[in-house]
Length: 220
Image (cartoon, rainbow, N blue to C red):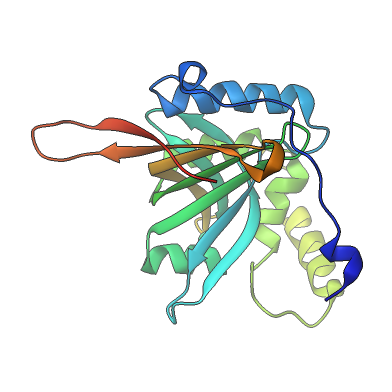
C-alpha cells in the first residue's frame, strides 16, 4: 500500500446535522445546502456524479452538472441522448447521484429514476446556452470513437458555417434534459472520530398512505 495515501486523513468538524435542523422535507434541506455550497465552494457547487448501469450490469459513473431542482422536478441535467449514459438510462431508468462539497464537509446521495423532460423544456434551456455550447451539442457524437481532435474542429467549423445566419441554433433532436425523480435522499455531514452524521429520507409510496418521506438516522 502506498504509505502516503494510507496516511491521508482529515478531522471533520465544520458542522453537525441534527434532526431538529434537518426538518421533515428533504427538498427544503437540499435547497438550503445547495445555497450554502454556492456561497462557500469555489468551483462547480452544482457538479454531481451520475451513476448508471449498462446492459451487462457494469456500473458507470461520470460528473454532470445540476441545472435545476425542485420538489416537482427532482434533479435536472442535460446531455446527449445517444451517449453511453443516455443509452444506459434508456435500458434502465434507475440511477443515483452524488454531491460532494469539500469545504462544508458534506455529501448528498440521491437514488431514483429518470424521466425525459418535455421538448419545450429542453428547447428553453438549449436556447439559453452560450452559442459555443449550442454548437458543441451538434458537433459531438458523444461517447463515439473519433480519429483525432481535428475531427471535432472540422465539424465545429462546418456547423458554425451552416448556422452562421441564425441568432440561436435549433436544438439537436438527440440532445435534451432528464429529471431524476428521487426515491431516497441521504445527507452526510462529516464529524470527528469518523462518527459522521447520516440522515436518510425514503419515499413511502404505499397505497392509501400517499407520498410521504420517512426520515431515519444511519450509523456512519
